[in-house]
Image (tube, rainbow, N blue to C red; front, side, top):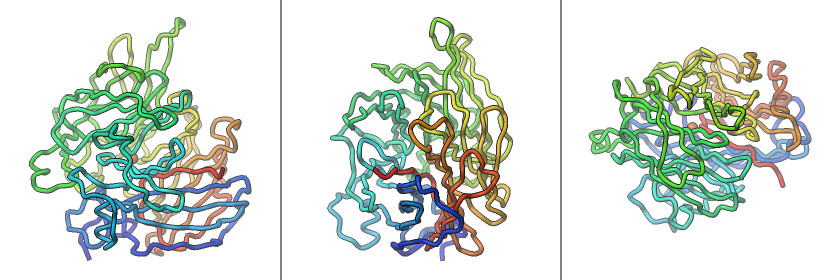
Length: 446
Ligand SMILES: [Fe+2]
C-alpha cells in the first residue's frame, strides 16, 4: 500500500463502481427535493507513488438521486479521461494529449450539459448516468486549462471562467461563454508570474482575479511533478478588478497581503448615488501560505479562515478583515445571489484542524449556526438548494455528506437551511464509503 497520506483514511479510494437502489433513510426526505446530488473528487486508480499529489487523483463522480421523499439510488463512476480509461484497461476513442488531462474537482451543469472540471485541463462532458461523453473545448475556443469554478451570471446566464496551464506563461485567460453555450470572447491577462489560480470571484460589473505567491516551479515540472508550484515569500501579491464586459486585456491591480486563496465565497459591490462602483467586497477563505512545507496537497497547517477583502476604487487601496477564525473551507451561497450582496452562506469546518467537522451557516449579520458530524468524521462541502425560484434567500435545503473514518461508513444529510443547529431532517446511509470529494452540484429533476 502506498505511503502517500492522500490515499489513507478519509482519502482512501474506493475500488468498485456500484449502483444501489432504495437506500436506507433515517428521518424524512422532503418530498419536494427531487433531483440528483452529484459530487466529484480524486479517487486514484491503482498504486500511487509516495509523493502522490492529492490534486492529481483520477476523478470519480458520485450521484445520489432523491425522488418523492425516497433515496432512489446511488451510483459512482470514474470519469473516463484518456489516462483513466487506459489505467482501467478500457478502450477509448480519446486521443492521448500532451496537455494535463484530469477531471476531478467540480461537476457543473451549464447550457443543458454537465461538465467535470479540473483547472489545468480541458473540460469533460458527462451525463446524468455518469457516463463520460468526451472532452469539450467549445470548438477550439478553450485553448488552456479551464477553472473548476466558473461563475454563471444570474442576470445574463453567461458563464465567466478563467484558465491557465502548468507552465511558465505568466498569464490567465478570462473566458466568456453565452447562456446557450456559444463562445463569446476571451482575453489573456498578464500576471506578475505564472501561479496557481484555483478560483476567482465576480460581481455584477467585475471579475476579481488574484495573483498570489504560489508560483510555477519549472524545476519541479522538469522532475515530473504534476502540481509544480511553490510558496514564494516576497512575491508582490495583487488582486485585480477586470470588467466582465472588457473588450481588451485590461485589469486594475491592487496590492494584496502575502496570502493564499483557493476559494472565494462571494463578491459584491457598493455604489455611489450616481451608480458608479465605489468599493468591491469579496469574502474569501484565506490561508497565510500554501505548499510552504508540503507540496503534495493542502497539508500545510496554515489555517484557512473566513476573511473579507475590500477594494476601494477611489483610494486604489485594498484592505482585509477577518470575519471568523474557525478553520473552514468550501463556502457556498444561494447561487441566485452570485455577485450580489448575500446574507446566507454555508462553509465546512475542516476535520484536519479540529478532528471534528460539520457545517457553519452564516446569516450575514454576524450570526452563525453550526452542526457537527462528530469526532473522526470528514464532512464534505455543503450544497444549497432553494425551495423554489421564488423562495427568499437561503430558504431551502442544505445537502452534505459525512464519512466516519473509523467505521468506514458514509451518509448524506439533508438540513433545513434556516435551522441547521436542529440537525438533519434526514440522513441517508450510502451503500459504500465515500472518499473525500472536492465539490458538487444539485441537478434539479426536470
Ligand atoms: Fe475548488
